[in-house]
Amino acid sequence: MPIYQTAHYQVRAAAVDKVVAAVRTFVQYVTDNEPRTRMYAAWQQQDEPTKFVHLFIFEDEAAHEAHGRSQAVREFEAVYRPELVGGPVVFTDYGLVAANS
Image (cartoon, rainbow, N blue to C red):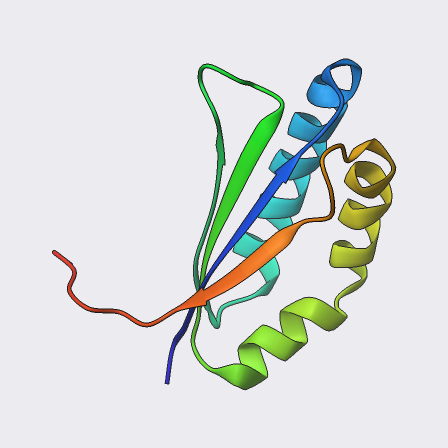
């Protein structure tokens, strides 16, 4: 069963460019190396560019676990985690109700 998840976080203003670069590198890694991650998108809030939301769809729990164990996750965390403000990343799981694709 697919896993639908979001991650919300905020970083220091001085770290935005560094985090954006890390996000792009990380999403490329996911694209190239995680075929069972159906979708991974990262959004930056337009009116508050220090805030980010990541959207994930994992094929199943095994895909979710493989993603979480990757070296790329640890490398991405090493960039953004020291820059967090307002608390840790908040991960939320969802169930699909309807979709247009």
